[in-house]
Image (cartoon, rainbow, N blue to C red; front, top):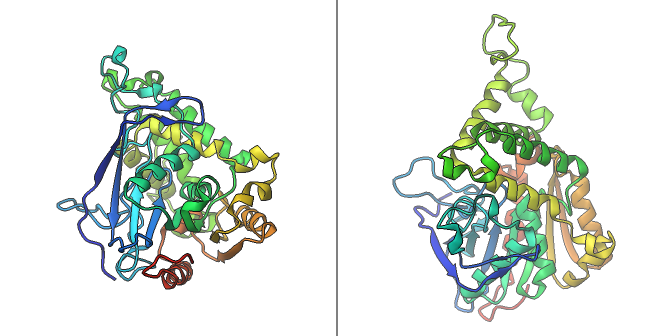
Length: 386
């Protein structure tokens, strides 16, 4: 199947401040985004794709002259692919607080008293709900009053769910993959250990390391290694690495690399530290921690989803995903069924752990293709609701 080809990011500036859940606001900000496919005449075929922790607006295609620059969901989005850009106009938006172009900790603080220095640790805490509010503004600027669907995996799935709660009238379908209605205590614990690795790095300088010309690379490496372990299943790690050593000779070292899995994790950590911002990591993992739509309803998830009664949902989970297990998706399904919401649920038997949502599993892609074909069949020239 073909790719969308070479793509070019776009920028949209907002002078009107964005009120945040914390009570703070983000003033004078810019969002970076990409679009693929063609918006139909009545603008009824738009699909918003929400990104996860270390991803961005760059969902599909590649950047001209940049090898290995394929979008992070290029196997899913494109001509003839499950989310077919011959049928849908697909939008990817980089969230505020990210390090991939939208206003974030690396950008100049708008307060003149800061002398043009980067926000750093002063960037306001953002939530999933804040991101959805920012996305809604951009979608509105594009002249789209109602999205055919909002799609996301993992943290992106939380954003897709939040769309149905904050703007139920502005989408028809929600597709949430490998996600959860909130983080478990164990998941919050993993995030906290990763954050501690970063903030205790001597090069972190309280989040204002830019002024010192350094990067807390050691902390970022450890944070990524911790996170990466949680994205893989035990079976996939065993199949790929087992107890294979780098050498037949035992080094009897407590600090050198002995096993292939150690080499792999260090490589992943090294790569991550070269392109990701430490303050962004802190912000995004905290947004993950805070997401909990049932909290405002006394812990009753069914009550939270009452506002989404006329939406249609697809939930997908993977059997070996222990970070966002199928049980968490089933909680969402139950809450929707309690409200007599139309919901489809697929539990894919895949060995890859949480990362399965990024991979090209034929059963998973078959489910996604069938669902988006159904959405497409209900899009008429008049933009009738599916």
